[in-house]
Amino acid sequence: MTARLRTPKLAEAIAEHIERLILEGVLRPGERLASERDLAEQLEVSRPSLRDALQILEERGLLAIGRDGTRVTQFLAPLTEPLAGLLHSNEQVTADYFEYREAVERKATGLAAVRASDPERQAIRECLGEMQAAYDANEPDREAEADIVLHRLIYGASHNLVILHVMRAFSEMLRRDIFFNRTQLFAIDEFREELLSQHKAIGEAVVAGNAEVAEAAALRHLIYTGQSVERFRRDEARTSLALRRLNRSTLIAGGQG
Figure 1 (cartoon, helix red, strand yellow):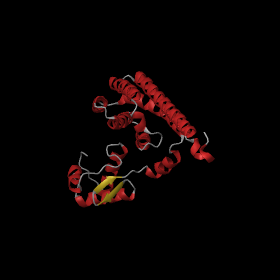
Figure 2 (cartoon, helix red, strand yellow):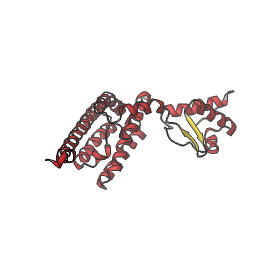
Figure 3 (tube, helix red, strand yellow):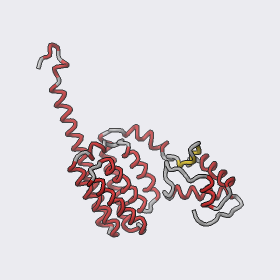
Figure 4 (cartoon, helix red, strand yellow):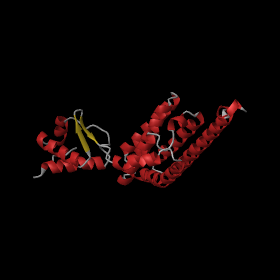
C-alpha cells in the first residue's frame, strides 16, 4: 500500500493491487480490512473508486462486505470444507497427511532458511520466545497456537505462494482437530517438552540460514509428531477395549462375568 495508483480503469487497478496483497499473504483469510476512509487514504485514491474495487473483489469471492466491514474471505473453503468432512478422524488419512507434510514442509523449511528476510527471521525469533513463555507458564492452548503460528511463518518465509496458501489451509484444518486431537497431545508433558525442543531446532536453523539443518530438523519433528499421534491413538484404543471388557456384564443376560 504505497505508491499512488493512476490508470484510466482505476477501480480495476485498485482491485488488482489488493488482490496481489491477498495472493502474497499480506492480507490473510478472515482478516478485516481497514475502514473505507483509512484504506482510501493509504492507497491515495477516492472512496468511490475504492468502493468499486471492493465490489469487484467481492464478486470474485475474495472479499465479503458486511455491516462489520470488509473481510478477506476463506477463499479456499469451497475446496477445504468438503475435504475436511472426508478426512475427519480417519486414521489412514492422518498418516497420509504427515507423509504429505514431510515432503512439502521439509522443502518449505529449507527454502525459508535461504529466502527469509530479516523481518521474517525476527518474527520467527519472537514466535520461539512466545513458545518458551507459553511452556514456562504451562499453557498448552497457547503453545498449540504458537505451534501453528511458527509453521505459518515458515511457509511465508519460503516465498513460495503455492506452499503458503495450501499449507495455510491445511493448518486451519489442523487447528480444528480434523486430523487428530491436538488438545489431548499438548496435555502430555513429555510431548510438550520434546515439541518445544524440536521447534527451537527448526526455527533457529531457519534464522541461521542453514537449509540442510533446517530440513533435517523439520523431518525429525514431523516423524516424531506422526508417531506420537499413532501411539496416542493406539493407547486410547487399548483403554477403550479394556473398559468394554470390564463393563461387558451390562450386555449379558443375568449380568454374568
